[in-house]
Structures are given as structure tokens and as C-alpha cells.
Length: 286
Picture 1 (tube, rainbow, N blue to C red):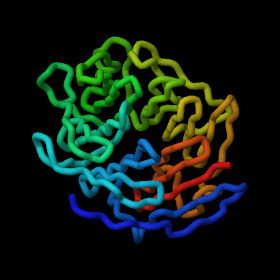
Picture 2 (cartoon, rainbow, N blue to C red):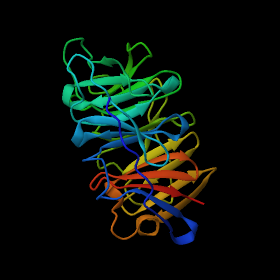
Picture 3 (cartoon, rainbow, N blue to C red):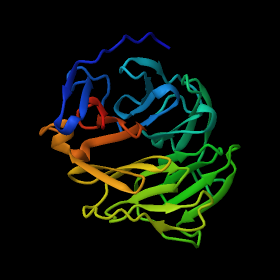
């Protein structure tokens, strides 16, 4: 693995209503090209699927690149990685969509193994969205048949939802996360609700988030605290209280909420990655 130089915080600004914004990468300084996903691991390390460069990178809380995915596996390097999830004991999973597999890394991004997503043991399916929990479950949304699959810690298929599973039909999943409070939560394409299921994928209910009126685009969960993005705003939901701030309040008028990947590391600390420009921001929410 080649040495990677440090990248520093470029600017700090105090946004409206006490929101504090740090700019870690600008479009001119970013090391990313077309990133698709971001997840926070131990010690606030951020794992970014740098899709255009066919790699996974790990950043510390200042934006310094500290690890990069190494070669490995039956088909070599990643190809169009779509999503990343952090599992039990720091396991790092990547939806390697171009190679139709899920790759597992250590938290230092050392290659550990791979899972070929399949329900019949033969047909390779394309993983698009991932989530994981502390019990060792890995959840995979595959786009070929439109299913969410649950794998146990040993990569055995344990349960599934959608397609011909008999318990629910799914539209394409555009966002997915796991919360110990809410279970598996996800948003379907053009859907008006945030959906949830228990870890065994046996039931589906809606998350009531009134007074939200716009269609949700993204959700990130921290146990009972949720951050939800719609077309204009970011909402924080915790302790039965819902607060919101517009995109222009938080990031300025040149940023579109639909271009951002939001990841929460605490109820007051967010990271936002612009998938269009590669810019990275850290936001403190009072």
C-alpha cells in the first residue's frame, strides 16, 4: 500500500443558528471521484467508497487518508464499489457491484474475504446497498431480483425479503441503515415513507416522522437518534423531538441536499460528502 499524504481542514465557518461547519475537502482539493457511500467506524474513522477510483479509503476525523483498500480476492481490486457498512468488531463490508460480490476488510482495510451474493448457490446477484449490526448480521439489497438478504456472521443466508420470498415486494432501495432501536431501516425509490423491519426481516412497518411532508431521500441512524434528508432540509429526530435546518442554512446556497451523503457520528456531529464534487464537510449541530 502506497503512502498517502495528509490533507488538512481548509476552512471553518459559523453557519446560522449556531451550526459550525468545517470544510475538509473542496472540489479542487478532493481525492475522490464520484464517491457513492460513506460510513463511520471506530474512533470516528470514515470509510468512503471512492467509486470513480475503484477503491475504499479510510479517513481520520481531520480528513487525512490513513488507509486504502489493497488488492485481493478472486477478481482483484474493487470495481465500481456502491456502498459500505461497518459490522461487529470493526468488520468493514463493501458492495463491490462491478464484480457482483461483497468484500470484507479489516478496519485497517486489509482484505479478509468475499461473499458472492446468491439465493440459489449459482446465480451471481449485484449488491447495491449494505447494512450491518452488532450481532454480526449483514444485510444486502441486491438489485437483480429486488431483495434484502440477511447473512449470518459466517455468510450463511439466514432470511430474505422481497422478490419471491413471500413476505413483501420491494422497490429499489436508495438508502439503508441499522439501528438497535429501530432495526433495519430503509427508503425505497420514490417512496414517501421510511420503512423498518426487525433483524429477522419478518415484518415491515413505517416510521412515523410527522411533520415531515417532503419525500425522504436519505437516513442515518444512531440508536434512537435519526438524521433524515428530504429535498431541502436535514431533520434530526431524537427523544420524540424533531428539528430541521435547510440545506442553505447548513452548507450554503451552492450545495444541493440531493448530492450529499450524510453520516452521523454522534447526535451533534455529522459528516457530509458531496458525491457530485467530492467536497467533504464536518457539521456540528447544537
